[in-house]
Amino acid sequence: MAFRDFLYYSNSDRRSIVIIALIAVVLVGVLVVSAPKSGGDAAVEAEADSTEQTAPVALHEFDPNTVDSLSLIGFGLAPKQVQTFLRYRRAGAVFRTPESIAKVYGMTAEDVSRLQPYVRIAPEYAERSKPVYYERETVRQKSASDGSARGNGAEQKLNYPEKFDRLTKVDPNTADTALLQRIPGVGTWISRNIVAQRKRLGGFHAVEQLLEVKYFSPELLEWFEVDTLTAKIEKISINTASFQRLNSHPYIAYEQARDLLRYIRLYGRIADIDALRRTGIFTEDELMRLQPYLQF
Image (cartoon, rainbow, N blue to C red; front, side, top):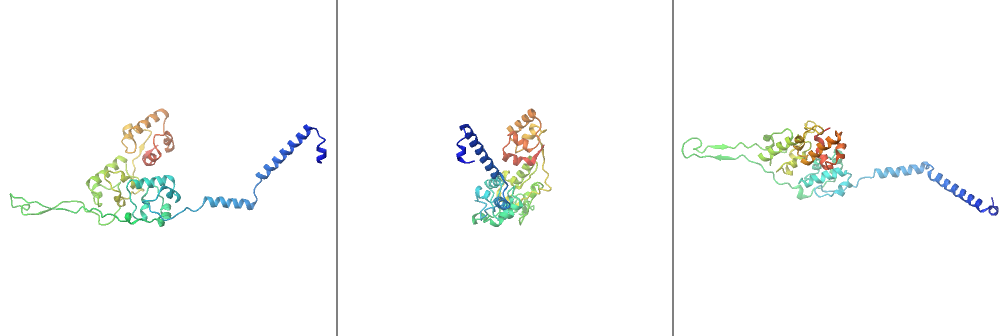
C-alpha cells in the first residue's frame, strides 16, 4: 500500500493501521530476543559461566596468626569456617607450624592440603617457650630424736608422674589424671579440670574444646588428639530431658533450658536441628557447639 493511498483512509482507520503495525513490530522483537542462541554463542556463554564458577581462588602467602577474615574468605573458606578459625585464635591458640592449621575445627583435609603450602609463620610465633617439666624432688628429712634412717639423713623421693620426653598424643576422652599429668605443663589442677569438664560435657568431640578448661594453655593443644572413631559422646534427648538435665550441660544456659521446655510444651516435639534453629533459642555459634550432643 502506497503512502498516498493511506491518506484516503479516515482518521479512525489510520489509527487502527498504526496500532496494528506497532503490535507487529513488538511481536517480531520478542521473537528475536527469545530465539535460541546459535551453537557458537551458546558455547561461548556456557564457557564464560563455567569460567566464572570455577575461577581460581586467590591464594597467596599468609600467617595464620595474623590473617584477617577477608583473606580467609578469599582463600575459599566458608563463612562458618572463618568464624571458627578466628574464634580459635581469639581463644589464645598460636599457629607454630604450617601443619597446625589442621587443628582448627571444621577445616577439611582438602582445605589443609590446599592452604598449607602458602603458610608462613613469623619468627615470633614459631619460637615456642620451653615447656615446664616437673622434676622429681628429693626431700631430706632429719630427725633429732632417734638414729633411724630418717635421722641418718635418708632421702625420700616424691612420686611425681614422669613426664613424656617427646611429643605424645593423648586422647582427652580416655585419659585419667595420672596419664594427663605426664604431659609437660599439666599438673594436678589442670588434669582434674579436664576430667571434670569431660564429665559435664559428656565427652569431647573436638580437641579445641580443651581451651574451655580452666587454666588450660593453648600451648598444650598439640599434646592432645580426639579419636572421633571411638569417641563416645553422651547425647541429650532434647524432647524428653528434664530441666535439670538440660541446665547441667555447659552449653545450655538456665534461660535456654527453660525456653526449650516451654516451647516443647506449647508446640510439641522438635524434629531436628533445623527445627531447633527456627525456635530462635540458640544462636548459630551455640548450635554448632551443641549439635554433637543432641538427640532428637
